[in-house]
Structures are given as C-alpha cells and as structure tokens.
Image 1 (cartoon, each protein chain N blue to C red):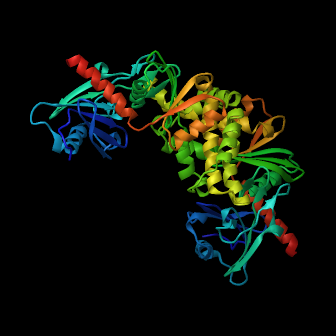
Image 2 (image 1 turned 45 degrees about the horizontal axis):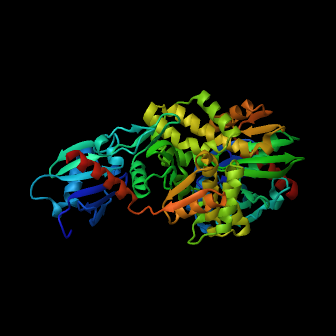
Length: 303
Length: 303
C-alpha cells in the first residue's frame, strides 16, 4: 500500500518482467512493485488489466494517471508499437512516445533506437542511456551496458552516435547451463587469475575461444579443474572476445559501465587490464532516471 | 527377426542412442537395431538388460556372443570404465578393451583417447578414426569429424598424434534453437553466398563473430533478412571461427572429412574455399568399420 497517491508511474516493461515505480511529482519514489507479467506472456489486450491490477489501490478518484513506459512493451509484438528512432539521435523522450489512454491511465511508451549499418536495435537500453546522461550531464564517451545482450554506445553531445550489441551474456548462460560444459562450470566461487588470463588470450587471439571451450570440460575430466576456475575462464574467454570486437568503442575513449556488481565488475576488471579509461555507474534506478527525464519533458509539454 | 544367428555384435553406445549391428564372421551385416536407451538414461546395472531385450531373438543356445562396443558406455558414468589411451597412440582395439561377461554376452568396451596438453578427450570418435584408417589404409593427414563436438585429429603411421575438439555444432544448436536468434534463423532453405561470406569474414577476423551474431536478429527485424540467409550466415560464422582456430591442422595437410551430407558438406565447402586439400569419406558405417577392425583383433588373439 502506497502512503500517498502517486502523481505518475514509471514502468520498465521487458520481455520477462514488469517493474513499476510509484512516483511523486518531486521525483520521490513512493513505492516499488514488480510482476512476472512480461511482454513474453501477454497479448495486446493483456497489458491494461495487468496495470489495473498492480495499481488498484492507488488509482485516482478522477482523471488519468500518467505512465511513462520503456522496454519491449513498445515492440511490434507488445502493447503498441513505438517505432525505433534512428541514430544519430538523443534517447527518445516523451515527444516521441506512442500514447495510449485506457481506463485510469495515460500511457506514454518510449521508442527504442535502431541503426542501419551495421544493423542493430535496442529497446529499453536507450532509457538507461537517458538515465546515464541525466546522472552525468555532458558525458561524452562510451556507455557499456552489460547484460544478456550487452550494448556499447558511443555518446556525444547528448546523442547516441552509434552502438553495437553482443550476445555474450546469453552465450554464457547457454553454455554454462545447457551445453556439455554445464557439468564443469557450476560452482559458487570465482578465480580472478583464470578470468584475467582468458580475457587476455581471447583479446589477443579471438579464434582461441573456439578451441578452448571444450578444453574446459576436458580439463575437468583429466585434471580435476575446479568449477570456479572453469567458470571464470569461460566468462573471460567470452568477454575477451567481445572486447576484441568492441575495441573501436573502448580504445582511447572514456568508458562508463552501467552496473557495479557481478557482470559489471567483470567488465570493469577486463577493461582496466587493457588500460582503458573506465568507471562504473550504479545500474540501480538508472532506468528510473531515464523515465523521470521523460516525465519532465511531458510536464514541460503540458505546462 | 534376423535371418541367421549372428557371430558377433557391433555396438555404438552413445549418450542418447544405442546402435547395434548383428554381424556374420565374414563381415556381413545381418540386421541393424537401435534404441534410445543411451548412457544418459541408464544406471550401471541397466546395460545388460537393454542388450538382452534388444537381442532376445538371436541369443545363442549356448556360450556367449561377442560384443564389441564403443562410445560413452565406456565412460566413468557408463557401464564400465574403459580408461582413455593417451596420444600418440593407435585407435585402441580389442587388446585395450574393458571386458564384461554377463548372461549371454562377452562384451569388449573400447577405450577413448585423451590428450594432456592441451587437455582434450574423445570417446567414440577414436573408433570412427579406426574405421577411416581401415577404409583408407596408410592415410597420413588430418581427419575432420564434424558433429555436435567436431574433432580434428592429426593421423600419422596409423596413430593419432594430436587432436582438438570444437563445440561448433552444439553452439549452433543452442543459438539457433534457444537464443534470441531462434526467431530469425529457422527456415528450410540455405544461402551458399551468405555462408561463404561469413566463413571468410570469420576466418580473417574471428572477433567479428561476437559482433555479428546479434546483427542476424537486428537485420531480420529491420531489413527482413530471410531465415535461410540468417541460418547460413550463423553456420558460416561459427565454422569460420573454428577454421581460424584449427588452421594448424588443415593448412598444408591432406584433410579427410568424415561425412558427406549436411554438416560435412558445409565443412567441405568452407575448406575448399580456403584452398585446402580436402576430400570426404561417407560417415555411414564408418564406426562399424572400426568395430570390425577390433573384432578382427579379437579373433587373432583368441585364434
């Protein structure tokens, strides 16, 4: 139960999850709610009922509550398509949003960003980038957003100039949970030295990654390689290959990694070992910062 | 029902399947049988009953039927461990087999092969290599055995000198069936030009593979890239990265690919484009040839 009726709702509506923040006009978070009713489980007419149910106790007596929404809810298979903006562009805000009015809500779905050559897309990360720019105004350089699909984005003068997506996180998950390596890499610990060596090898000779993957299994069978070392090595090989390919992004540019823990810390360590000029920004609420920036635009427009 | 009582049984007992050949002493195949009772579904005491059931109608009135068996049944988690032979070595035969007598059978389980540096193992493929050597006596060069885990083996004077395993087939399956790419690569056709371009790019710049994978999805979304082209490109990127890493094997050496169809044809095409001296050998019954060679050793021993 929220202590106060919110002035607006921030929504991060992804493939597998919905995250909601109940906000005051002054930017205070009154409450947080989440649900597993992601885009992947919903048909077009399922979105409004989910929102109604999640916010039933805070609906206004009259009028409509503004909702600023980012993520896969704006895809073609989502609630309503919010067509991609094309680079170079600032992260799309309220003026570019697709608007839906329904029941008690006035919903603004933020577009993603596309790039023609090479073909690439993002949907959701553009709002994290908006949050990063709101948190560090004037930042010119590279944003690295690690995750299932890690994004590297070149930011200049408040715009996304170019970006590139890597499936490193998804590959790591598939290989460590579902491939023959699953028998050899599942442990609670970590091995920094193994990670460092693997990153370095993969950056200098990316083809080695293909040759070394099965070796993790073989070394576990023949030498009793520990799961901690094997997992750190697997992570290092994949991140190293990504860094070899993303070198045009991080070389000689200030890099800001969104995310300090876990995967963010691994990218930080790998980039520092390469002498990159790199720092981290907390990932927590970075999306909220971006949604808040869009809400501010909305208020400016309607003021 | 077999027409004649077999003199011996050839068995390829892998993780997911059991394949049996009912053989005459002269090398004639009297019947073939198969079952899904692979190692993955069996405990140690489950193997003999499976064999009994599969061969119930051909059991000899007295005495025991020789069974020559290769594959994961010989692993530590299998029927009985057949410890790895170490390179350099000839493909292990009957004298190196682990022997089990049970009910109506006299079972000889062939060992796999291991390599210390770099750590690698094979179990089952050594018998395909024995079959290749039986089919092409005196072959000196490189055996390429494409599959879930593709093996490259340097053969000289009848011995496996060194080998290396690549998870290319498993990566392709995971990425095309379970990753975000599954939406973009599933089609019935193929695109040779896309395959060729991807192989060439991955061989010359392996790191590009990391950068180009998500691009398959993005190009499908933005440009309507066909599933056939996307799948051929994915295959080309992964095989190309493998060829970049396996270059020490195939460069300047005669290469014999085991398998003519599908994946074998893809490796052939990729290697020919690199100017490699490459030919194919039918994969069908290559394992049987290896098991037959081991049976001949057994007869020599017991003669």
